[in-house]
Length: 189
Image 1 (cartoon, rainbow, N blue to C red):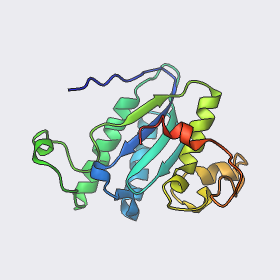
Image 2: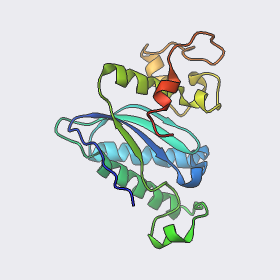
Image 3: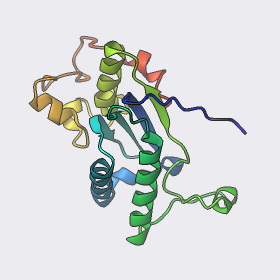
Image 4: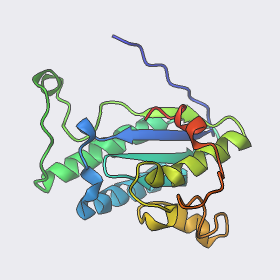
């Protein structure tokens, strides 16, 4: 069995990928997106951190978090988020995806893949690449032609604050703004 080694940098900024079980299109559901938002806000209230960027796609999400000085407890936050979302989702009689018997024996529910992928942001260039990757992801997966057209993203907040133009990274734009393939190799999708 592989040994997973996580990087814990107190006060660090991290990029995450979290995937639903068997790529279930969970976040197509408005109620799932709403419940996720409620759980995320509650988590931020309990254990403060900054959500620098986030995007919800039908079967996975990407997020970038900055933790407070001296705090490296992102695993605890993700464990709580996944557990709490699952508990509330199933309590509302939502269906779970089909699951293999060996996983059921381990008492894992059928909402999330068991782990998540994290990357410690190294410097400003790394931050910018992952920040842009998150906001470009709906275009990358063919859901929309422009990041502005995907409603479940922090892109809108950053465009409102002037970080992005409204037409940033539209697929019909012939200019290559960023080398997203370079980032894609680092995010574990």
